[in-house]
Length: 190
Image (cartoon, rainbow, N blue to C red):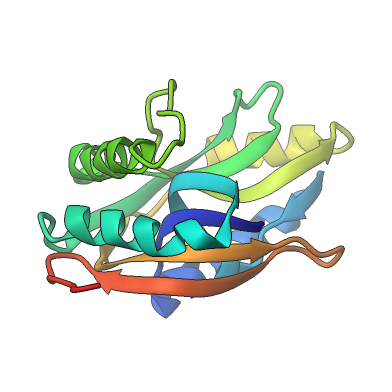
């Protein structure tokens, strides 16, 4: 079994920008396990433990969906937390522009992948990038105040690819390996 997920990756410029934001957040306290900037992505569908023999079928379904989509211009606009800033468990950055298209893409991937035996998502897709996971509540007050008062500068970028990742969990954090990468709007033959 291999652990898989499907995601829209970021370009280096946005990775660096989010890395800078994480550095700012780190200075404001909290016991947070921060995500490495090169590991930040927009997960479209988490597959989890998967039989190796299904990889080609997954790739085929991804390719049949992405041909319908051109690169998606979007932006990062604000910070937030799940479930909320009073009791944060996950610190994230949100996007606003063209979220309907991103949601539609995620839902189509979900529908196609469900044909292979995965259950369809029962929660509405929320377009966000996880920046960190809260370990405990120590020192969170200053961090959440900083997030609420921060004047966010909108940053525009483009999602132009989708990737099927293999994820290997290690004590130092996950290691991601690309199993398939495809550009939005291009036809692929498998």
